[in-house]
Image (tube, rainbow, N blue to C red):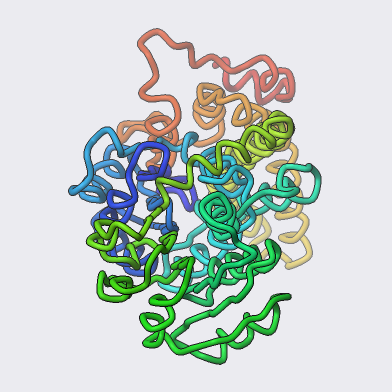
Length: 463
C-alpha cells in the first residue's frame, strides 16, 4: 500500500443516539487500550480513539474500507444497532472536524472537547496509533477547532458540561444558600466548581483523590471553598444541598447510605461511568440528574448559538476541501515519484550502455568529464519530459481523474500494461479511488499531456 494512502473508517456511539450507559459500554476501557486493541487486528495500520463523557469513538486506517468496518464490528457489541454510527473515509474526516469545533457536543460549542481531542491524539501517538493519514486528519480537526474559537463567536458564553450542571442546579434549588460538593478536581470538576462559585454558592467543598489538586481548585474560586480527600465525600454528601460528581472512577463512589440521612439533596452526576449508584435515585428526598437530563439545559444554550453555526460550518467546509486536496496531492506525488524512479532506472541503464559504446569506439575508458556531460544531458531530458505530465497528474488527482494518471503511467512506465499488468501502486489507486476502469474507457493520451510531448517523442509513440 502507498504510504499514507489508506482509507479511514470510523465508528461512533454518542449522546445524540445513545444513552449514557450505551456510551460507557462501547469500546475498550480507555483510549490507549482501544488503540492498542485495534492495532493488533490484521490489516490495521493506524488507529485513534476518543472517549469522553458523551461519546466513544474509534477510527482505523486500512487498505480497504470493508476491512476497516469489519475491524470495528465488535466495537459496540452491547449497544443497540440504532445507537451506532459508522463513517466512511470522507465522513470520518468531516465528523472529526465537527467534533473538535463543538458542533457535535452535548452543549453546542463547548470548549472542553478540543482539549479532549488533543489528549486522545497524544494517547494514540504514545502507543503507535498515529501515522501519516490520521496525523493529518486529527491535527486538521484540532486546527479547525482553534479557528472556530478564535474567528467566531461560537463559544462565547457557551456552557461546558460542568457549568451546565451548575445551571441545572440553580433551577432546582436556591444556590446562594446552598452547600455544594463537587467530587473530582479534573477539568470538568474545576469547571463545575468555578460555575457554582460564579453563581454565588454559599459553601463549596471539593473532594478528590489527590487533596493538593482539590486545594488548588478551592483557591482558584471566589467563594467559601475547602478541599477534602475522596473518602470524605460520603460525609460531606450527607450535609450537602447539592452534589456534582465528575470523576473517571470505574465504580460508583456514592451509594444510598451517603444520602440516607441527608434530607433534600440535588445530585448531578456527569461522570461516565456513573459516580452515583442507581439506587440513590429511589430515595424520595434525593433528585438525581445525569447526562441525559442535561439536555434541557443545553437546548436553551443551543438556540443562542445557532446564529454562529453557519459561520462555523463554512470554516469546516473550506478546511475539509483543503484536506481532501492535500490527500489527493500526496497520492499524486507518490505516483509521480514512482514515475520518476522508473525513468531514472531506465536513464541509468541507457547512460551506461551509451558510455560503454563510446568507450569501445575510443578503445579505452570514457573520460569522467564526458560521462558527466552524458549523465547531465540524460537528467535534463528526463526532467523536461516529465515536467508537463507531473503538472497534469497533480491536476488530475485534485479532480479525482485517475484515468489520466493511468494513461500517463502507460506512456512513461515501460512496465505498465505489460503481461503482469500495472504496478501494484497503480492498482491500489484505481481500486481505492475509482474502482476498476469500466469497459470501453479510453486510454488515449490526454490532450494536455500530448501537446507538451516533443515531436520526435510523439512520433515514436505513434509508431
